[in-house]
Image (cartoon, rainbow, N blue to C red; front, side, top):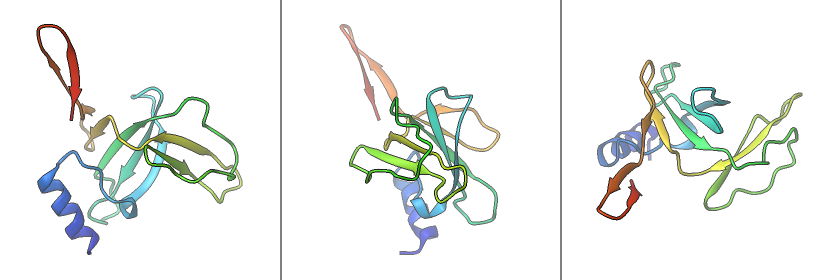
Length: 122
C-alpha cells in the first residue's frame, strides 16, 4: 500500500495514531518531555518534519553499543547504528504525547474521573 495513502487513512480513523516507520526522520532525547525519546516524522516527504511523538524510555536501557536485542510487543529499540558513536534506547511502543511543528505537546490519553477513582483512556 502506498505510504501516503496509509498515512491518510490512519489520520482519518485515528488522528493521534503514529505514522509508519518508513516516514521516520530521526529521534532525540527531548528536554521538553523528560525521560522520553521523541520520534519525528515527515508524513508527506517534503523534507520538513510534520509531527512528532514522545515515547517513555525504559529505565536502564540507554546503551553505547549496536548489540541490541530484538524488539518485543510492548517495546521498540531506537538506534543510530551503524555509527562511530552508537546509541540504542528501548522505549515503550505506545506514545504518550504528540506535537505538530510549532505546537504544544498534547496528551494522547484522556483522564476520566468518577466518584471514587480516575482512569486513563485512549
